[in-house]
Each structure stands twice: as C-alpha cells, then as structure tokens.
Amino acid sequence: MTAIEQKYKKREVRYNNLLQKQEKADRFISNLRLAVFLAGIGAAIIMYMAHNFVLFTAVLILFAAAFIYLVVRHEKLINSIKYVTVLRDINTCSLKRLKGEWNTFADDGRDFMDSSHSYSEDLDIFGKNSLFQWINTANTFIGRRRLSELFSGVIGNSDDIRNRQEAVNELAKMLSWRQRFLAEGMLKKGEMCDPRKLIRWARESSEFFRNFWVIFIIRVCPIITLILVVTGLVMNKVPWYLPVAALIVQFALLSYKVKERYRMFSIAENYADDLKVYYKMIKLFEKQRFKSPHIKKIKKEIKDKNGLEVFKQVDKLSSIIDAIADRRNLFYVFINILALWDFQNIIALERWKQKSGPVLIKWFDALGRIEALASLAVIRFENPDWVMPVICDGNESIIETKGIGHPLLTEKRTYNDFTIDNKVKVLLITGSNMSGKSTLLRTAGINLVMAYAGAPVCARWFRATLMEIGTCMRVSDNLRENISSFYAELLRIKKIITEAETGKRVFFLLDEIFKGTNSLDRHTGAKVLINKLSLTGSIGLVSTHDLELCELERQNERIANYHFQEYYKDGRICFDYKLRPGPSTTRNALYLMQLAGINVDENTVF
Image 1 (cartoon, rainbow, N blue to C red):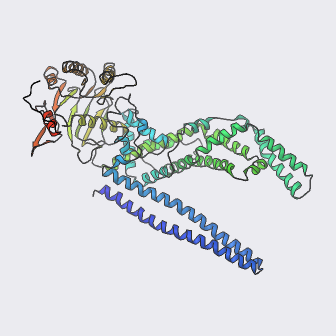
Image 2 (cartoon, helix red, strand yellow; image 1 turned 30 degrees about the vertical axis):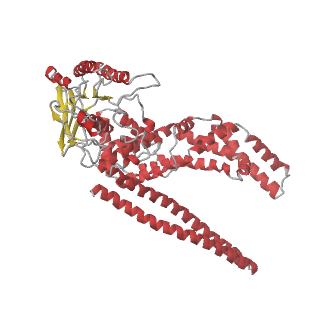
Image 3 (cartoon, one colour; image 1 turned 90 degrees about the vertical axis):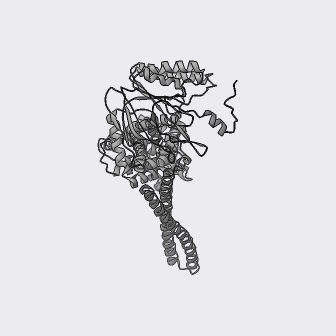
C-alpha cells in the first residue's frame, strides 16, 4: 500500500469509527427523547390529578425545556452524521480512484460532450472512462463548467497556466481543507441548479419597492394596524370597525403585483437549498488563508468596497428566502395581512439586490474556479511522482517529453520518450495491429490538455509551447446530416490544415487517415497531407499502416519514422508498447485472424 493509499485508508477508518459512535449516540438520544416525553406526560397527569397546579406547571415547563433541548441536540447530531458520512465516502472514492475503479463514478461529464469539438471525443475528455470522470470533484454547476472549460482549450496565456500550477501545488497539500470543501458541496440532495436564472433575477430591480415613501408606508401601516387591533379588538378602547377597516385596506394592498411577487418568490425558493451550500463553501474559502497569488487574486476580486465577506452576504439572502418560505405555514395568511409580510420580504430582497445582486455572478464564478483547481489538485496529491510541465514562451511549436504515459491507465501503463520541434515536425508512427499507436497519440494529447489546464502530467519530464490541439481519430458516419465517415474525416482534416496555414500553431494527432478510401488514394492523400503540414508552424503525430509512407523521411527532413513492434512467446503474441526509431518491419493481421478463430491459408490466391 502506497503512502497516499495509507492516508486515505486512515481517514476512511477514522471517519467510519466516528460515524459508528455518532449512530450509537443517535439511537440513545432518540430513546431518551421518547422517555422524557412519556415521563413528562406521566408526571403532568399525576400533578394535575393531585390538583397541584404549581407543580403541574413546573413539570410541564421543565420537561418541555428538556425535550426541546434534546430535539436541538438530535438535529445537530443528524447533520453531523450526514457530514461525517460524506467525508468517509470521499476517502472511499479516493481509494477507488487509486485502484483504477473511478469509471464507476456517477458524474462523467457527458453533458459537456461535443462531437464538433476539435479533440474532446478523440482524447476521452468527457463521457464514460474520461478524464473528467476520473478527476472531477466539483459539485456546483459553474464549478463543473469551469473544469470542463480548462479541459476544452487553452485558458489564458503561459503566465496564467503557471499561476494555476502554483495554486494546484498549494491546494494539493491541503487535503483536509479540500475534503471539507468537497463535503459541503456534496451535502445537497440531487444536482445543483443552473444559477443563471438566479443571477438574472438578482439583477432585476423594482424601483417601486426601493422608493423611500413606499418603504415608509409599508413599515408604518402594520404598526398602526397592530395598535388598532390591540386597542379595538382586544382592549375595546376604539370602535371595532377601525381595526377591521385597517385589515381590509392591508388585504387590498397585498393584491398589488401579486403575480410578479409570486414569480420573484418562486425563483428565490428554488435556490434555497443551493444557497445554503454556496454559503458554507464560500465561508470555507474566505476563512482559509492561501499563499498562492492566483487564489489570493480570486479572493480579492469578490470583496466589496467595504470589505464585507461574501459568505455573510450570501447568508443574508438565504435568511430572506427562509422567511419567504414561511408562506407555506398555515398561519402565514394572517401574519401576511397583519404585517404586510410579503412586502417586507420584497423590500429586504430589493435592498440585498441593490447592494449585492450585480456581483452575484462573480461569487459563483470564483467558487467554480476554486472547485476546478481543487479537482486538479487531486492529480498532484495522488501522483507525487508526476511532473509539473514547463510551459514555454516563443514562436516555435515544441513538445518534448520523457517517460510519458497515459494518465487514465493504471495496470498496463507504459512510458515512452519523444521530441517534436522546429527540426522534426511530424512523427510518423507505424506498427502492427494492437501495438500501441493510437494509445500513444491519445497519451500525447490528453497530457497536453492536462498541462494547459494547470495540472501535472503523467511523465518524468514535459515541456511544451502553447498550441491549438486538433485530432482526427474516431470518425463515424453522421446519418442525420447524411455525412459519411470519409467525408467527416475530410472535414476534420480540413479544419486542421486551415488553422495551420493561417498561422495558428496546431498540435495535430492523426490516426490511420483516409482509411475510408482505396489504398492508392489513401497513400497519395496521406503523403500530400503530411508534407503540407510539415511546412507550417504546426507539429504532430501521424499513425499509419501504410509502410510506403515511411519513404517520406528520406524525402523530407521534417518527418521522422518511429514504430512499435510485437514479439511471440509460447505461441502468443505480445507487445511491449515501446516506441522505437525507424519504420515497422512486422505484420500480425493474419496471426490475429487465426487467434480469433478464422482459418487463413496464406497460400490462397483470390
């Protein structure tokens, strides 16, 4: 067991032991509540039957206080049990990730899948068995989206990437804080709602309820009405029709913009549970001290002019919404008429909106960015031997790596070295079936995606400049748009060529290009394409079965041949998945056919 596994296991055991103690305490308090209730009822009955009304009252007060105390303690204990359960489950999931069982995680990011994206489907960025499924720990809507954006293209420049790397390194060391931060986001039942509707709602304003005189009338009217009710209906000091008239007037006032009011309240209530999560997560973030300039900048950006902490402002909104939720109370209609409670809540909302509404999006975005960085920090923490890539400035396209492996593979991961720069711009990869050509392309691509996000990469050394990533690997027919796989492949390749020829630096990954046409056209087309790309500022890898293309190395010094090979042991075909210089010299198609149970006579002539 590795040191990382031991840490997760130790925390899992500790939280599990604590959970068992809490569950035992839960059963004890539940039984004690019942006992206090029954004892209180019994004692009250005895005192009542004994006509000792002083003790009767004392018993009721004493046992009621004890019962309420136990209810409050029990509620806190239940919340603590939920929290500890989540913390235990986080460590259980972390152990699963280390064992390679992360493909069972529920959130695979399939909602971010885009068939038109330049590389995400080919490199398994989203969906089942994807990079997102492996490492995502974000729970909020914007947090998930921020992480998906980091995986979908270069965000910022090389300095921005280096700043994210520094933040990831710091967060990686903060295991306890990261797990508490994650736990707060997991406590909500169901998925977090898309906050865009709430953000739009927060920017809306009702000038009517911000008017000084309107606020004054809404504040004063309930006071006058309450005085009339007490003096007229309770004390009989004034005629009864005055308080009745005042109540009728206030009832009539409540009909003003009732539909708009209910719409406003409904939107607020839909986010009530989410806001409680936001409050706790933002509080954890704001209360924690960080050294990373990038995280400090995020923290500073959400402060208001008075320096008021964001979590307090979110808590204020949450409290207002809780007051709005009281509308479902049986007695609310009477309270509403007497105190104009709907209007009081609207005034409170408008004041909050006026002060905090315009910056609500900044708060959510900041939280999402921290969630994304915390997800990347998991990679750093769980893989301390992986390297933080060097992101270079400059006009050349470069990728240089040593000991690079595929991050999503665990047991069968192999490591290779390669360099592509201004001298050798295209690596032509040949080899027999199943030898590792496609995996190498995906290994290069997915590690570059991680590097640009700000995460460590699965390598001993990694250096690269900023480039667009373009792939053509998994291409299929599109029946809905009546596009064949060959034509779809042409469209992908055309996009790569266009970007490369217009001056963009592209890192291209092409796997068995033009496989949808005859061998002569495939060979000719591939030769033209590879030569054309080698003349641009772009670099990349091209895998092929066409050994004739290996001649390109002699004709074009910007192209280099590399290959994978197989070997045979005890009548079985084996692969070492090691990248070697030069063209492939072996074939295994007939052997694989025989291995699959297809009888093949090599001397048969058709």
